[in-house]
Length: 241
Image (cartoon, rainbow, N blue to C red; front, top):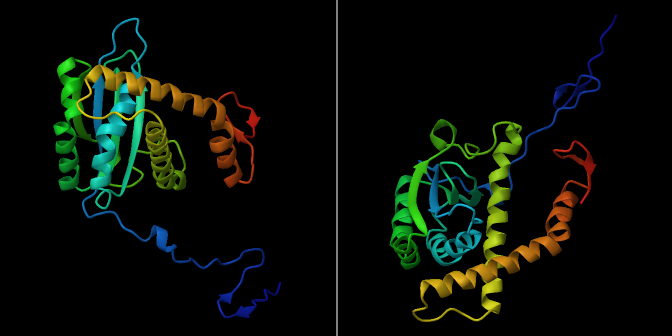
């Protein structure tokens, strides 16, 4: 049998197989993380009395009044960041977390600023904030961008997901800020109870946004990016948003 090889600029081409030349990433992806960056979790552990619901609005208070100003101040030094919210009847309990991907110096500066925030000190004095801690997390010391992604995902999803969840976290924080501006503003030396009540109301309003608009504004448009392909959910059925 005679094998005919077609000579092109790129050489010999095997039938049925194409050579794809790699392309340079667009400028939006050109920024490299600061040298020595790694993931750290800054955790706010809240009081959670027995038979009571978690005080989810305290997450919002801390995110909007405490974390947001620090993120703005350090925005050029932090490559990636996101929030994580959880409450379970275990040793961790109710914890609101800020995860940041930055170098050691930046992480220490962020943690110091959060510790010094007046709202943090008031929450600690009241007993509502049990502890504030920082730790390195993720595989390989948290040094790779995908270090905190779920290891069960494909490598490509692990590497790209941190950008998605940072956008989600930023949207949630921006939504809180927009709604807070539309309500009566907290001015002057408002006592802690008044601040907590304000964010309890704000948290309920944001929850209504998710309930009423999340299916279209978030899930539908996420599905649209993937051209409305069906996906497998835990019930193992196909669904489109």
